[in-house]
Amino acid sequence: MNHAHRTATAAKSAAGATTGSARSSEPGLGNAELAALLLEEAARVEGVSDEQLWMPTHPDEFKFAEDDTTDGTTTDTRRQQELDLPALRPKHEGKEYEDFENGVAFAKGEGDAHVVDPHDVDQGALGDCYLIAGMAAVARADPGLIEDLIKDNGDGTFDVDLYIRPDRYARPVRTTTTVDARLAVKYSGTPLYAGLGDQVDGKDELWPALIEKALAQQKGSYDLISGGNINGDGFHYGGTSELLTGQRGSYLSTDSMDEDEALLYIGMALEDGVPVVASSRNLKDDPDLTREANAQNVYWNHAYAPESVDLDAGTVDLQNPWGSSHVDDLSATDFLRFYKAIRLGATSA
Image 1: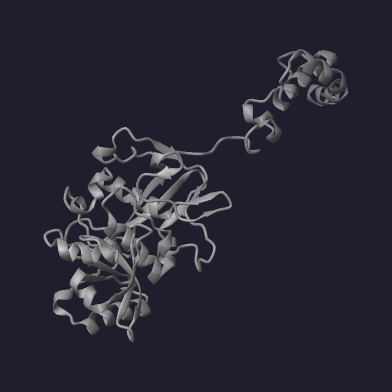
Image 2: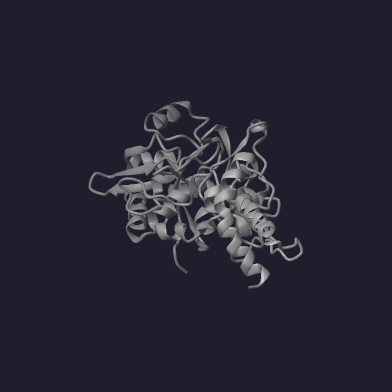
């Protein structure tokens, strides 16, 4: 019998005596430490020298799942992104990032037809209604397009794809940004910027926040993706629909439309699965019109994602990216008074 075989056999016979003494003299020993002690004891019983005793060369060779006090895994594989976290808005300096460890890219909430739902979006303390409303519009047109943009790496990071123009006149290129689940928070559990989607079985849905963060990574800060700052610094923005689908969109001024045309453009886009966003006018110099608009949840210089059109009633419903204060049964007449443009995207070349 060679020394290795003899040692293993002796370890079995030594186990009973050694286990009790080892545990009593070394409180808190795990299986790995106990296994090492058993081999050493067996070596002494059989007269095996230290040079002849096989011992593991890596600590994980004596690692057992029951030694772990967390989730039963043997190692902690949660990673963080390699890129520096994007800077916050200057007014939010001092706010903390928090790791949403229960975060997943997608979660299917009660009543949702798809894991990606337009009402998963919730604009935070950042002037990026154009982005959040655009996300809702693409999610409504074809939720699979959003789902295709984000890969959960299973280690706390996510690969987020956006279509970014290399220069002003170039076609957008699908570009991957790896981000983690650390988000700036107002207070623990509540993101400062794009909010959580559905919360299902203890999991937090993150896809709107991940897309927003990936864009902020591309620009260098959250402040630089607010409405007035998205273009510039070498970044060429062609609209949210282009950013998320790679297809060029179109801008239609409502000043050249009549009421029927406005509703038809929106209604046909919704029916054909085309992303559609409506942009409200700048009403700050007309306080009376502002009050009228606000009474119907229309706020100036704001983007909305139309939800439905009633051609018989001549009305339109629009989703506010705030996650509340939606616009219901707005007449076509008021739509033209309050809104300056309809932006249509595309989902295929």
